[in-house]
Amino acid sequence: MKQNYLFESERAVYALIEESDRKDYCDIYANNHLMRLTGIQLDQESAKTAFNKTLKACSKQNPKYLLFSIKSKTTQQSLGFMGVADINNQEHSAEIGILLHRYAQGKGFPLESTKATLTFLFRSLELNKINTRFHKNNRPIKRLVQRLGFKPFIFDSIEKQSNADLYYQITNNTLSESL
Image (cartoon, rainbow, N blue to C red):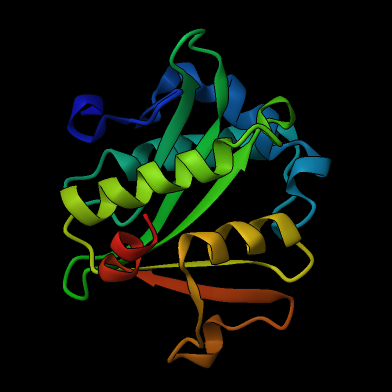
């Protein structure tokens, strides 16, 4: 299954999560500092349970959720994860989010990884639009999505809205223009 979704960027490789990613997943998802602006704060036990559910969700026939591990090409060290949620094949849309270990932050990996993932999703999964949402105080992510060409938008459904979150969207055409 992993080979079905494998792609790469200049300094990293991306693959569907597998059992060997459990420790890195739990380290990130149970790290209150890394998760402070996500709205998700898990202890180690809850992170293990979430990993099991995520692993199962990613292995479904037509998954609605994918989680890619991001690893250094040269060292194979885990850099973090790129999540793809709410995959809607009829609307050709999805939502993405990135979580990186602290040691991978500030080195250009968010831009490189997001570009690689967007390119993969638009080309391989034939998506037309990709959404992202993030806490309004997460200024680095806001700069990142704006740099890539994402534009602010409002969900059709008010239930998905949160006053603490900002919502951005990019289309296949917009990404091509920004690269």
